[in-house]
Length: 151
Image 1 (cartoon, rainbow, N blue to C red):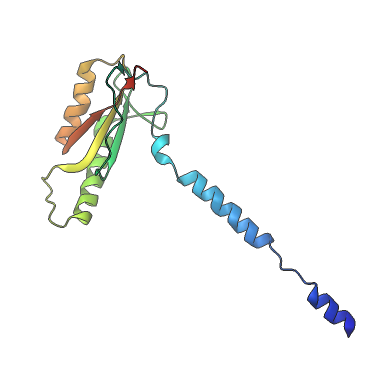
Image 2 (cartoon, one colour):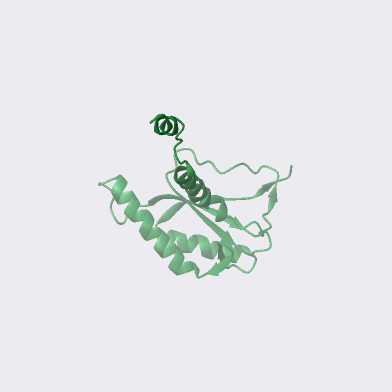
Protein backbone atom coordinates (compact mmCIF):
# COMPACT_ATOMS: atom_id res chain seq x y z
CA UNK A 1 0.00 0.00 0.00
CA UNK A 2 2.76 2.42 0.83
CA UNK A 3 4.37 1.69 -2.58
CA UNK A 4 1.32 2.91 -4.47
CA UNK A 5 1.13 6.14 -2.46
CA UNK A 6 4.76 6.80 -3.05
CA UNK A 7 4.48 6.38 -6.85
CA UNK A 8 1.40 8.64 -7.02
CA UNK A 9 3.21 11.41 -5.17
CA UNK A 10 6.19 11.32 -7.56
CA UNK A 11 4.15 11.25 -10.79
CA UNK A 12 5.10 14.05 -13.20
CA UNK A 13 3.01 15.31 -16.10
CA UNK A 14 4.17 14.49 -19.62
CA UNK A 15 5.17 17.83 -21.18
CA UNK A 16 6.18 16.44 -24.58
CA UNK A 17 2.84 17.10 -26.35
CA UNK A 18 2.64 20.63 -24.97
CA UNK A 19 6.23 21.45 -26.00
CA UNK A 20 5.59 19.97 -29.44
CA UNK A 21 2.57 22.24 -29.88
CA UNK A 22 4.53 25.31 -28.72
CA UNK A 23 7.33 24.63 -31.22
CA UNK A 24 4.80 24.13 -34.01
CA UNK A 25 3.13 27.46 -33.18
CA UNK A 26 6.48 29.26 -33.07
CA UNK A 27 7.41 27.79 -36.46
CA UNK A 28 4.04 28.75 -37.94
CA UNK A 29 4.25 32.37 -36.78
CA UNK A 30 7.84 32.69 -37.97
CA UNK A 31 6.81 31.56 -41.45
CA UNK A 32 3.75 33.78 -41.87
CA UNK A 33 4.63 36.89 -39.90
CA UNK A 34 6.65 38.93 -42.39
CA UNK A 35 5.39 38.60 -45.95
CA UNK A 36 5.66 42.35 -46.49
CA UNK A 37 9.46 42.28 -46.47
CA UNK A 38 9.48 39.14 -48.62
CA UNK A 39 7.72 41.10 -51.35
CA UNK A 40 10.70 43.48 -51.61
CA UNK A 41 13.12 42.59 -54.37
CA UNK A 42 16.52 43.36 -52.88
CA UNK A 43 18.32 42.82 -56.19
CA UNK A 44 16.92 46.12 -57.52
CA UNK A 45 19.33 49.02 -57.57
CA UNK A 46 17.15 51.92 -56.47
CA UNK A 47 18.00 55.46 -57.56
CA UNK A 48 19.96 57.55 -55.07
CA UNK A 49 18.36 60.85 -54.08
CA UNK A 50 19.68 63.28 -51.49
CA UNK A 51 16.27 64.08 -50.08
CA UNK A 52 14.78 60.57 -50.00
CA UNK A 53 12.42 59.98 -47.09
CA UNK A 54 10.68 56.83 -45.87
CA UNK A 55 7.26 56.15 -47.38
CA UNK A 56 4.64 57.78 -45.17
CA UNK A 57 2.31 54.95 -44.19
CA UNK A 58 0.54 56.95 -41.50
CA UNK A 59 -3.19 56.59 -42.02
CA UNK A 60 -2.92 54.38 -45.09
CA UNK A 61 -4.88 51.20 -44.92
CA UNK A 62 -3.19 49.22 -47.64
CA UNK A 63 0.12 49.25 -49.51
CA UNK A 64 0.71 47.69 -52.91
CA UNK A 65 4.44 47.26 -53.44
CA UNK A 66 5.55 46.90 -57.06
CA UNK A 67 9.14 45.94 -57.89
CA UNK A 68 10.03 46.96 -61.46
CA UNK A 69 13.37 45.79 -62.88
CA UNK A 70 15.49 47.60 -65.47
CA UNK A 71 13.58 45.89 -68.32
CA UNK A 72 10.21 47.11 -67.01
CA UNK A 73 9.09 43.68 -65.76
CA UNK A 74 7.13 43.32 -62.55
CA UNK A 75 9.08 41.16 -60.08
CA UNK A 76 7.18 39.34 -57.33
CA UNK A 77 8.97 37.05 -54.90
CA UNK A 78 11.82 36.68 -57.39
CA UNK A 79 9.63 35.84 -60.41
CA UNK A 80 8.54 38.03 -63.32
CA UNK A 81 4.77 38.56 -63.53
CA UNK A 82 2.48 40.06 -66.16
CA UNK A 83 1.66 43.60 -65.08
CA UNK A 84 -1.94 43.98 -66.31
CA UNK A 85 -3.45 40.81 -64.76
CA UNK A 86 -1.63 41.37 -61.47
CA UNK A 87 -2.76 45.00 -61.15
CA UNK A 88 -6.32 43.98 -62.08
CA UNK A 89 -6.42 41.30 -59.38
CA UNK A 90 -4.95 43.66 -56.77
CA UNK A 91 -7.46 46.36 -57.73
CA UNK A 92 -10.31 43.88 -57.37
CA UNK A 93 -9.06 42.80 -53.93
CA UNK A 94 -8.59 46.43 -52.84
CA UNK A 95 -12.07 47.32 -54.09
CA UNK A 96 -13.59 44.37 -52.19
CA UNK A 97 -11.78 45.36 -48.99
CA UNK A 98 -12.81 49.01 -49.38
CA UNK A 99 -16.44 47.96 -49.84
CA UNK A 100 -16.28 45.86 -46.67
CA UNK A 101 -14.70 48.71 -44.70
CA UNK A 102 -17.01 51.41 -46.07
CA UNK A 103 -20.49 50.41 -47.28
CA UNK A 104 -20.78 53.79 -49.08
CA UNK A 105 -17.80 52.94 -51.32
CA UNK A 106 -18.84 52.94 -54.97
CA UNK A 107 -17.20 50.80 -57.69
CA UNK A 108 -15.97 53.88 -59.56
CA UNK A 109 -14.39 55.54 -56.47
CA UNK A 110 -10.62 55.85 -56.19
CA UNK A 111 -9.00 52.92 -54.41
CA UNK A 112 -7.67 53.71 -50.91
CA UNK A 113 -4.46 51.71 -51.38
CA UNK A 114 -1.11 53.42 -51.91
CA UNK A 115 1.07 52.02 -54.70
CA UNK A 116 4.74 51.97 -53.71
CA UNK A 117 6.96 51.81 -56.79
CA UNK A 118 10.41 50.32 -56.31
CA UNK A 119 11.98 50.86 -59.72
CA UNK A 120 15.50 49.95 -60.78
CA UNK A 121 17.57 53.05 -61.52
CA UNK A 122 18.36 51.74 -65.03
CA UNK A 123 14.66 51.63 -66.00
CA UNK A 124 13.50 54.29 -68.44
CA UNK A 125 10.76 56.77 -67.61
CA UNK A 126 8.64 55.25 -70.38
CA UNK A 127 8.51 51.95 -68.45
CA UNK A 128 7.69 53.70 -65.17
CA UNK A 129 4.97 55.73 -66.88
CA UNK A 130 3.44 52.52 -68.27
CA UNK A 131 3.22 51.06 -64.76
CA UNK A 132 1.66 54.24 -63.37
CA UNK A 133 -0.91 54.55 -66.17
CA UNK A 134 -1.83 50.87 -65.79
CA UNK A 135 -2.43 51.41 -62.08
CA UNK A 136 -4.42 54.58 -62.71
CA UNK A 137 -6.61 52.78 -65.24
CA UNK A 138 -7.54 50.25 -62.52
CA UNK A 139 -8.43 52.95 -59.96
CA UNK A 140 -5.23 53.53 -57.97
CA UNK A 141 -4.53 57.23 -57.38
CA UNK A 142 -1.97 57.36 -54.56
CA UNK A 143 1.65 56.67 -55.46
CA UNK A 144 4.99 56.70 -53.67
CA UNK A 145 8.33 56.29 -55.39
CA UNK A 146 11.00 54.49 -53.39
CA UNK A 147 14.63 55.67 -53.57
CA UNK A 148 17.81 55.33 -51.56
CA UNK A 149 19.17 58.19 -49.48
CA UNK A 150 22.73 59.38 -50.22
CA UNK A 151 23.74 58.64 -46.63
